[in-house]
Image 1 (tube, helix red, strand yellow):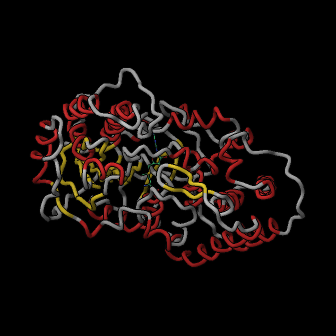
Image 2 (cartoon, rainbow, N blue to C red):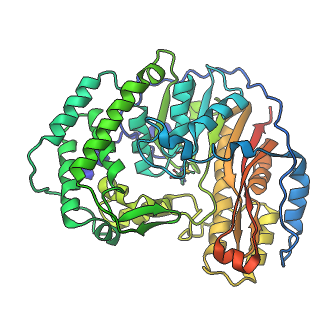
Image 3 (cartoon, helix red, strand yellow):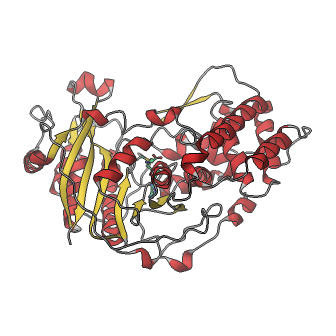
Length: 479
Ligand SMILES: C[S@@+](CC[C@H](N)C(=O)[O-])C[C@H]1O[C@@H](n2cnc3c(N)ncnc32)[C@H](O)[C@@H]1O
């Protein structure tokens, strides 16, 4: 673990926070940022989204006012409903090397690059880059991009996916070498966390650690390739399944680690050979992924005012805790003690229930006051919900302020986000974030409603069927 951490190259001296870099950036990455302004495109059309607010028992004046003032900018775009999900990536070489259910699709990024009119010399920022869909698609499309994410496992995966692999023979022989090593007992162990004990049987745990130790003896970047193979099979060789907010325990036949690893690595090699012509063409974009907090001004000062566009999707306000979903992968490489896990959990944007209150981040948002006021009188199934809701908008306010600093005048944002609902209280996140964006000098050009997400069955039983919007909001920074 300590060795892994030392691999990070700190560039703290260049920015206001510590952004370690995992692996080497692709081909001496140097962004060529030109200052040509992005052109706007004709907005999409369609009837505005309907929202069932009439049955809310509490005060809804502020939210009704918001709905009324944005209604002319809402456009139904049900044609994109699949593209805002990870599903289309499942069958895509490289994009599917690590299952990241919270991701969006490569095709969506292509459409948004076009919509934002991002030119070949422009640069794109994704402050919540996850497993690197925006970056990989930009690289493929011949556009430059930088991504940030605070979850170390996401950064690791994205960086491996962004690597150039000019020599397949080296990878093939590394895979052969790894799989033919005589098995010995590992000397390391997993951190002492209950989820690890529940997830793996003792034999599987030892096999995983054996391969991890063998992979650590290999030089980068091949080490990253092999390690990603191992990370990608952890769910398959465990008794867990990634399911919404949690890791669900499941009964299944568990394949031997060696078989699952061989299959995964061979698939990855075939993928590289298949996509060599598109991904490794001479005019591909330069893309780089960094570990960093979107709430902080992480990038070096020289990047301020330089980006033409932002394509991103923040965590949704849905109680989803990435540190729990990716607990096994974190335990393999980035967590050596339960305190590490807690630190990661509390570094995430406050979209989950264990979020803590923070002083000095207050926002001016009447709809938020209204929601918090209404929640006070509700019988909530978790009394930390108001802390999370408040924290979410406070954190996103910091993020949007940073986006305003990074974008050049006229620069544009496409942000994929879903609305929420707690105890029947509707949270129009897309509109509330647009209000915050206005406070930081953005105009909301359009809001594409891509689909409606249903409320939970428990909520439905009490409050009826109340689907909420999943939207792409488009903001333009005032010139
Ligand atoms: C909806 S996912 C983005 C998925 C991405 N679009 C993709 O296709 O892989 C949101 C991401 O935000 C990250 N995140 C949470 N808090 C963050 C923070 N404070 N700064 C940067 N990233 C954060 C999560 O780790 C997660 O990867």
